[in-house]
Image 1 (cartoon, rainbow, N blue to C red):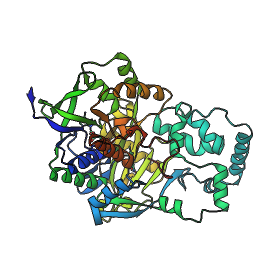
Image 2: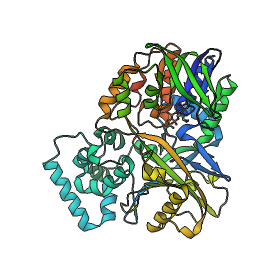
Image 3: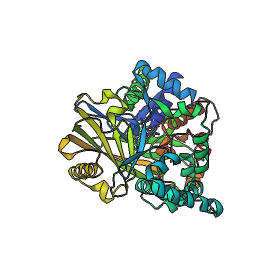
Image 4: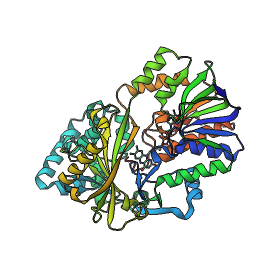
Length: 474
Ligand SMILES: Cc1cc2nc3c(=O)[nH]c(=O)nc-3n(C[C@H](O)[C@H](O)[C@H](O)COP(=O)(O)OP(=O)(O)OC[C@H]3O[C@@H](n4cnc5c(N)ncnc54)[C@H](O)[C@@H]3O)c2cc1C
């Protein structure tokens, strides 16, 4: 096998985290190589182009409280970074409801009779709350009552995770629904926040003219200008170590040819589970077993071009309707009008959550398109006869699953990886963390700073249970 000349840092994956790290290292004159297994950079935040139409995987609001991340984004795109109004609602019982759930709006939409039942269920939970708040159902029900939970949390959450709400950790709810409860919502409705602070956070966000991929293509281009090398279609398949350090990596290109590369430091944004399982020689059984206990949820986006007018002004809607499998609809014209070249057309991402290898994941593309169009018509948000063209994108390992075994398993994996002095996991699936782009980027930047002499604990990024922007909702 061919061996290559040693560099300063090797990065696994050219998503936001890997590219941010490569940028920081390039700015500090480090010799960097990034290996990316796909033919495109950007990871989950890439944009797929199809016949001139652009499709985001999910939808990516650029919003952060971090000055460093904002600077990186702004400097990279300048005027091509649009400011977009934020609107994304829940679709349920053929009606739109506010998201995050605003109880007053929900009560209005569900009618007087149901509102009384919801209030009754809320009073009941206040008198007899669930003493434990370990799982998602207990956490939400204690704040909203069981009935509102059943309307607005259960169906979508179970579509997303593919497991009952009783098995989802409360930690995820705390991240997602920060500072909200039925009583605080009623208080806010009567005495609105006049500072305008929260309002600006959730009313507007930034978005690249041609989708998020534009940002990361440009960052990759800048990495190249600083001397960094990005090898696409090249997968890290083996990580050779001596128990305390990584010594080299073996990568495989599309033709199956393998090469070995060496560096002083290694940053990994490949899935944490696969990182552990790719170490050679094999690592202790306990670490392997713990990594196998960590699971991810994936998603499928059926990307379609349709004739007709914008079905709704929202960038996306959450499909809470339990009668269909569809979980969300992205509406790319609302994200950026530049994504859809023909004014007479709309472009939608009809999204399904799945687990790699399950029936939905393995369904043929044409059947998935058929299912999605039928469901779109069933919930009255589009007509099958308006379909022009489409394709399917499968996004593996998009969501780390915070199930009941995850705290113990992640602890074991982290303890094990801590012994490697020159290897740092970064990013979203790279650290098995429900990170937005900004937090993924921060882990990349801090890991790069560590190589330059800093002492950041990157596991602390996005770690405080209650530290999250008010509108984290992907
Ligand atoms: C549906 C959805 C919607 C989202 N919406 C938002 C949003 O609105 N705002 C926001 O800020 N964030 C959002 N996010 C989060 C955002 O997508 C991620 O935080 C970000 O893309 C993670 O960056 P990353 O570099 O850690 O990982 P990724 O983007 O996953 O990139 C990792 C890269 O590593 C590559 N790779 C994997 N294995 C290997 C290997 N063995 N060898 C070489 N390369 C490898 C992959 O191909 C990939 O390119 C959303 C996520 C999802 C799933």
